[in-house]
Image (cartoon, rainbow, N blue to C red; front, side):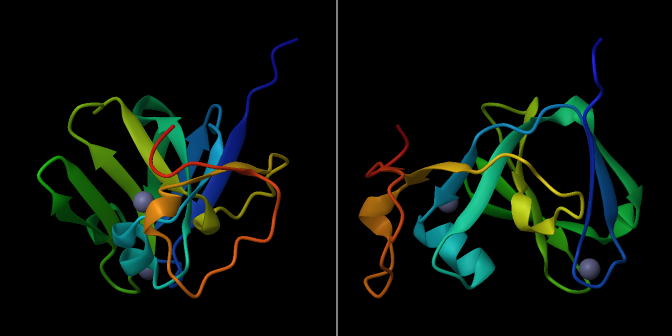
Length: 136
Ligand SMILES: [Zn+2]
Ligand SMILES: [Zn+2]
């Protein structure tokens, strides 16, 4: 029988709550400079989801959009700054979810490091996952 996948997540302040009803794609550790700056970390953990599967349950007015490149928007909580999703204009039917904001336990594990050519020089990648200079 088909088992419906349902995940919930929230920002740091809890003002913004969302739900994903559907599959969460491959977990990618993105080392690009924009992800590093947006998160203040060595890399961001992002996964593709269908826009149609994403629903904001609370605090939709808090989701602020920042145009980080000509074709990408990064959406975060205006109160606490938690990054939630990013949207690329060439794939508007997909969102890139910031996996660290999930509250539902996730069974799947990261599969790849991407944009490793841009990783922080102080960062050591200590796992055996595949590494790609850019997007594979
Ligand atoms: Zn917040
Ligand atoms: Zn990135």
